[in-house]
Each structure stands twice: as structure tokens, then as C-alpha cells.
Amino acid sequence: KGSIKDGKLRMDKTTQDRFRRAVQNLEGKEVAISIGKFENLRSLRANSYLWAGVYGTISDATGHASEEIHEIMKAKLLPRRFVKWKGREIECRKSTTRLTKMEFWQYISKICSEVAELGIIIPDSQGFDY
Image (cartoon, rainbow, N blue to C red; front, side, top):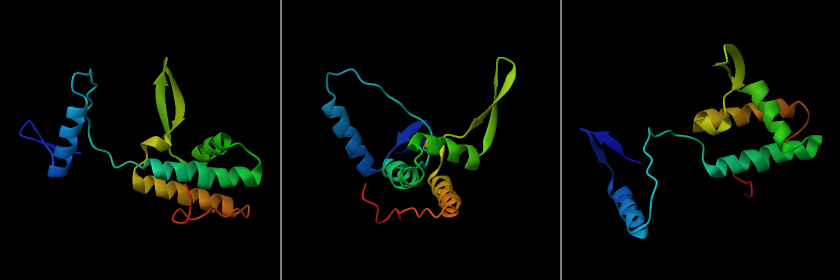
């Protein structure tokens, strides 16, 4: 990650070193370059916990597929938004991939409360084996 100041890309020393190594490793190859605003989104490890630890536990207890649990929880717990499509308003839910770290852990906390009513206890993320 870096920042833009006075039209120039600024990176700390560690990021500069990683960037240089990546460029050297790709010498002579065609590359894709992407730059965008940094977003503090949930990690892949946290996503693994959601799918295996949270949805997996609920799936085992209820018999529903993890994908079904995912859709149910999104519908119940994530904010609605509306998108215009062919002149009509279509209701959508925010994707869990677009949640910030804080929003992501709040979402998991809400899921835990939701399923606690069914007697389902979700394993703690700290002790969870990914």
C-alpha cells in the first residue's frame, strides 16, 4: 500500500522493496497493473473462518448447505440497497467481500446471536483451526 502526494506514488521502504522484487521477477513478461483506493477489508483468513467456522458449524447443526446459510444471513443481517435495472428498482444486499474489517466482525457477531437462539455455539476465531 502507498499514497499519492503531489501526483507521485509514495511507498514506505518495505513496500518499495517488495515492489522492486515483484518487478524483477516479472522481467520480460506482460503484466497487469491495478491501482485504487486502499480499503481496509476483511482478510482471506477471516473469510475462511466465516465459511468453515461460522457457516460450517451452522450447516452441520441445521442440515442447510453453507451457501444457503450465507444467503439467509445476508438477507437477514446486511443492509438493503436498491439498484436501477431496466427502469425497475432491484433489491440487493451488500456483499460480504465489500465489508470493512469492523463491519465483517459485527456481521459475524450478529450471526452468532442469531443462531444462539437455536442453541448453536460458534467456535471462537482465535482457537479455530483454518
